[in-house]
Length: 290
Image (cartoon, rainbow, N blue to C red; front, top):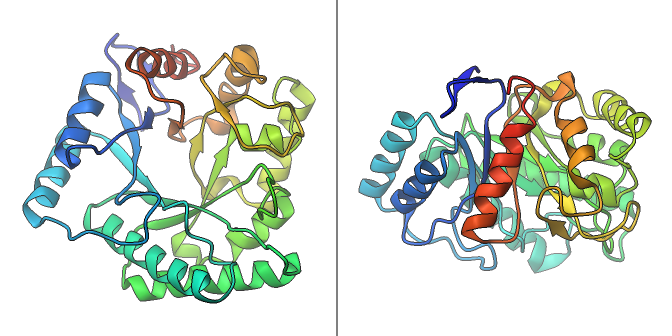
């Protein structure tokens, strides 16, 4: 979708940040408007707790109306406790919690729910992938929703995290029913997994593997994060854009690749009002139309 930013230049890709909902959803809209975001990511509940609070229907209606009037694209990120590839009670609670988050996202008319693929722990990775796919499918069914997509995110491979390998990531994404299927690419995770985004041939390799294993058409959102850790480290640590190991030139070259044009870009970065504005300005500067 073509948008107009504040400088009246046409922008071909929406840009925003993970935006706090402290004080409620209407406060989140105010923050997005102040920053000039046309895309944002939120948590629909505490990202470190299982419990889902009751949704205030009036607040929900005002949020949907405000989001529409601001022409704001919004996705949510599922809680960090969720691991549908886990064992026993953890897996059961994860499926239930994910179903609740999907249901909440649809009630709020969000575009997609981003979720980590989970960790295999002591299980064989192949068995963990099977359980993860079944868990994602069950969560979608239990949510009794029809529209919101479930975007599985690639990982840095830290610990026993699934989806460091794009073949594994693609297998998991393909397990989602096609009408609900989506993927989220995180640049810091890809870099920590061994894709050196500072190099043209490595950026091309990432693009080719993503198209072959996952499918470009399913890529719904890009998490644009710099990395505190070196390429191939397997350690997931985000840094402000242009200040990390990937660096500004590597991120800019990646984002200006025509194959990623039109996909919303979301920064998930350390907090700070000045840093938020700088990170958002960097994202906008990477738009080929600017």
